[in-house]
Image (cartoon, rainbow, N blue to C red; front, side, top):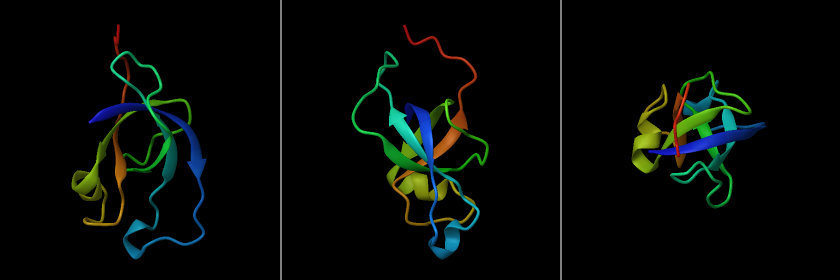
Length: 89
């Protein structure tokens, strides 16, 4: 699990059959101190509530595919929660 900040949205004109209605968001992963780490990535929003500017936590790989309404869809990252408050320092 990793924290990230949602920095944008992605619009897809065509999606895999099990991904209809799932939002895709551009997320900047953060390190333990809340600083940007690596390149932004695209994550499927398993909460259906996250939006730009929010602090979220994500999971990757097989677990990401299981976090969405339709299981085993082809995603690499999924947002599984929105962080209300974090003390990172």
